[in-house]
Image 1 (tube, one colour):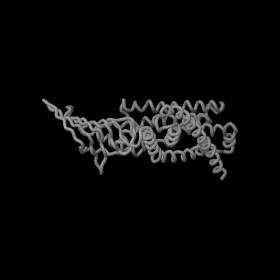
Image 2 (cartoon, rainbow, N blue to C red):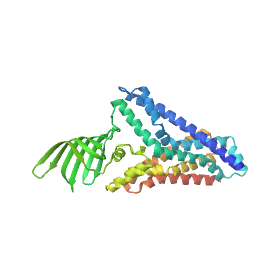
Image 3 (spheres, rainbow, N blue to C red):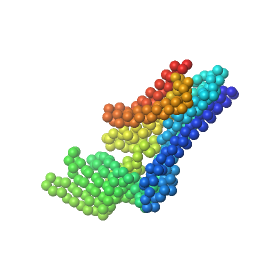
Length: 354
């Protein structure tokens, strides 16, 4: 019974520290981003609307800051108990280092479950709604869901999309058709509208290229035969890192079915799927700072080293992401590599501490 109480005590201290760190990080991010986004105030989009937009994005930002929050929160939670000699008393009473780490892992498991729910069901929807709401405030009803376009290959065709609106209307669509490497036709439409389960082009110009001439046709309405659905176009035009794991996997499979590389969506998919291992490795690093070589230094110094470690972890993942495309190794190793390095380093330092 005593062990269960100690587990709960450790978990409560670590969880409280993680939540405080998350609140501080989100508060700082909210203030800095709010000041920066005040430059976007125009028309019906005022200063209060900027604040509402940033509040809508809090689930996504909470997810983004979770690794750093867990690392620093674990450092602070364990460090405070080490400073008051509580950890020393626990170990003197027979509590093993493994049991202490298990007490730290319990709140992290709870956080992981919450983050996985946010990543799959909450943040993709709040991000899309927030972006659409902001643009509608700026541009009026029917504004663009995204300001960036995109390119996509499908069979013998290459598409360029200008943008897609909240009502699933594609704007500024261009299609290039090839026979082997020879351009045989080009089409441009002002809009593509999803009507009754199929796409209809509006104000479409079709140009066909022959050896001795070109022919141009103009259509007020024209059927667009494609396997692309509004959901797939939304995935194409939305930021990849804000999509749910299931959306990322579906997007990657679609790209692979078209003979294209799916490195970017797979990279973010593995980042979200392997989040439990990532957070676990960061907890090991935090514990190694408290029980290992840094146990005698000031708490502020440990937190500083924790921040440096967290940033190094992020930069290493960011470096390996494009490397997986250049050198052709699986994106899973771009995520798993830094995680394993952190876990092995943490275990090594803990082992040295005895």
